[in-house]
Image 1 (cartoon, rainbow, N blue to C red):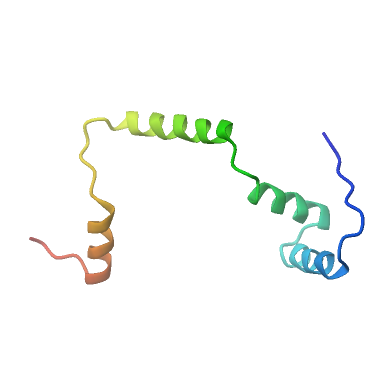
Image 2: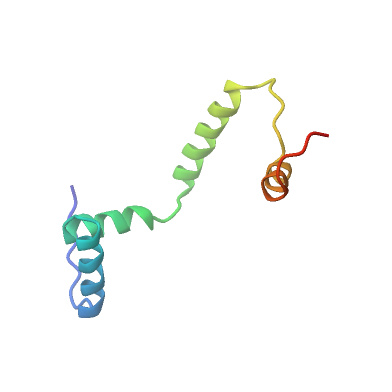
Length: 83
């Protein structure tokens, strides 16, 4: 595993991450690792992996009609009504 040393970080930035770590019940290192994972830059390789997973999911139900999202949202807002 690689290691990174970042000199001259702002003290308030580290304090904020330490508070977040305390609130999440983990170490500062684990909190920073989590933040880096969440904010990981998108790469074409990751996009390819996601597209492949989505295609595999779609292939599980090839002939099943899907309800459009806007209909589901409308029904949720207005309450379901039989047509």
